[in-house]
Image: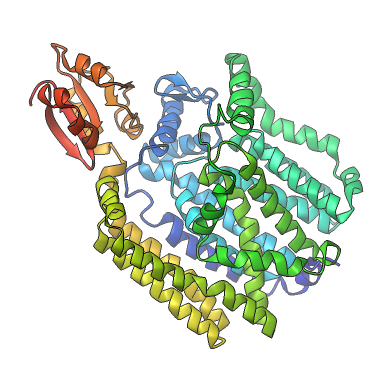
Length: 544
């Protein structure tokens, strides 16, 4: 029997309290100071500029970046941001608001999934684990597409499992599953249906329930899915015949299968440290949460636990096999991992056994040791710290402060666990990243902003350049400048190109990294520095 059947008896008691707690937590982690910092290079400025272009041109079909068709991403997040711009204006808060809302939605759906599988207590703990995971916090505060994919995949799998686990409202839940999968495809392409389909197929295969496919209303489901996902793909393909070949063959299949075409090639094990860091401190409990319920074999495993394990492993291994890898790609696996970890912690609190207590202690022990080792690394590896100072404006003193706070809380949490205050130990771990994000937002982000954004420099250029003239960058397009100026940009890729540009008899302005500028002796002699922002210089062939 699925565990969800006995959950319904007590689900009505205080069922809104966990939702209120999670909303309050997410308001702090995702929404606090959301519009204070400027847009960062790279990606935030690019996606915000693309959304802004939709509003200004009225073309919501073909995304454009720097005046050219931009086929790399599907438009769902851009639509959300463009809608926010229409209501709130062209602000940083409006650009990031959809990410924060989608992050909140992912946490709430994760809780609802956990409540269905294990009860409200475990669901709440799973939601807390997800909300306090560093990667989730970062991507819920940034103008990127990954959080929209994570939300709609989580929503789709929630509706699938609801239809699988109980016959009541099965048809409605299946139709909602197909609709959510359609939005996932609009969020980030074919992967939006491939991942849920792979997870569901593996789960039904392991359970010996492949015949459940006959109950999934596949014909009507395909129609609903296509009604949601297909219209935009048809429209953009009609307007731009080169779209499908680029997006499907090159951007998706080429990136996945071809080492030569992969934009971000990484080794197979790349996602191991990415996940460990992206879900700290919770990631250390995942091996136990996966292995313990499966120790008696797949046939004996709880359906819900098995579904979550397959959900996590399918996504993790799928992207590990891909040639192109980015840390954000595995975000859709985080809700499953969070629920497994929340479930094992809830079991530890509600029905501890000596074996579970011992295993949890071994999972928790590395955390304070890891952060103590990190403190020593920070103190001894001065070249690394010097590089961080040059690139991000962060000092050794800054890092020591944050590291000391987190290490201290981990040590306290460990001793709370040893003395059997399990619930308080869990709360201390959760508080770690609530305190951590507040320290980062108030102390670190203002120091990093000049190194990651071109807002001030772009507006300085905008006041000097004649209307319609392009911004010029050396080596790297600073895409946040496009959002703040409404101008197009060009990139110079060699020292000679830069020298030729500076030789103009008209005023020439160019943004260049300070480190690169110092290497070009002829450029230094041919230009003046007009403005400095972080590690960037605004140079000109004419002094002010």
